[in-house]
Length: 332
Image 1 (cartoon, helix red, strand yellow):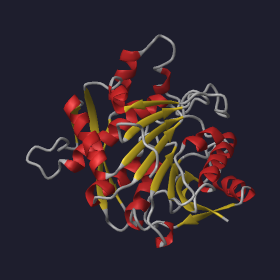
Image 2 (cartoon, rainbow, N blue to C red):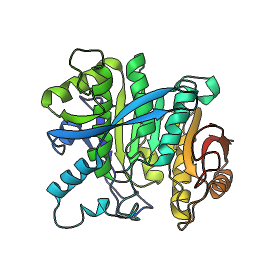
Image 3 (tube, one colour):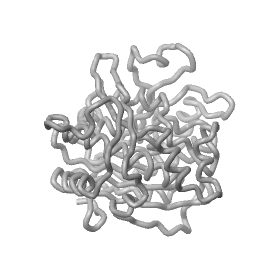
Image 4 (cartoon, rainbow, N blue to C red):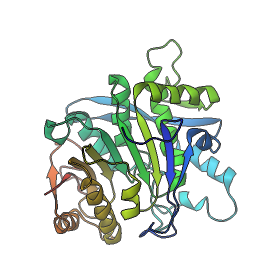
C-alpha cells in the first residue's frame, strides 16, 4: 500500500520554490485537509462545464467560478502580489503558471478519456493503480476519472501537482469537493450540487463526510505544489510494481517548460513497471516557442516515444483555428 498522510486520505505536499528549475534544497511540508480548510471560504460559487465526446458521451463537471477565486484572493491580499495571478497575463514565469483557468486542451483530453474509457488504459493490458496529473490547475481530466471512480466504486490513488500551492488550495481542492458533492448526492432528495451554477457551503460536516467517503472507498488524493524537477518526481508516490497513468494539458508552451516537463514526465514513468501519459497540446505555441515536434524530439532524447492519437470530431483537432493534438507517451 502506498504511504498516506496519517489520519487522512487527503494530503497537501508543498515544495515551494523561487524558481522553476530546482527543489533540491527545499523542505517539503505535509498538511491535512483540516489545514487546507482554514484557507477556504465558507461558501464557494461554482458553474458547470458540459463535456461531450465525439461518440456522444456526455458528462457535467462543476468547477469553482473564477470570480469567486478572485474575491478570495482579494480578501487575502497581503499587499505584495497575491492578486497578480489573475491579471490579463495567462502566465507569469516563475510566479504563476495559469492554473486558475481551464484551458481548451484539457477539455480535449477530457473528451478523449470519455471515449477511451477511464479503465481502458495502457492498451487494455492492465488496471491503473495511480493517476497523476502534472500542471493540474482546474484538473478537468482528473475530475473525469475521479467522478468515474466514485460512481464505479473503484479504489484509485490520485496525485495532482501544480506549480502554485494557491491553485491547489483555491481551485483543485474545491473542484474535487464539488465533484464528490455532485456525484455522491445526485440520487438523494436534496443533492448538494443540483444545478448548473450555484453555491456550496463548506462546513465541517461536509469535510468530515468527504474524508469518510475517501477512507471507505479507498480513494486517495495527494496534492503537490512545486516546479517540474527531479525533486517533484521524488514527491510523487510510486513503486516499481505500480501501473501509472499520467495526464497533462498545455505543458509544453515554451522551450524551458517543455524541457523541464519532459524531464519530470520521463522521471515518473521510469519509476514504474508500466506507465503511460496522455496529453493535450497545441501544435505550436506562437510567440513563446513550444511545439509538439520539439516535445517529440525531447522525448526521444530521453528514451521515450511520444505519438499522436486520433479523436476525430473534436473542434481544433481537425484543422480549425490554432491546431491542437492529443498525444500518448511511453518509455522505449
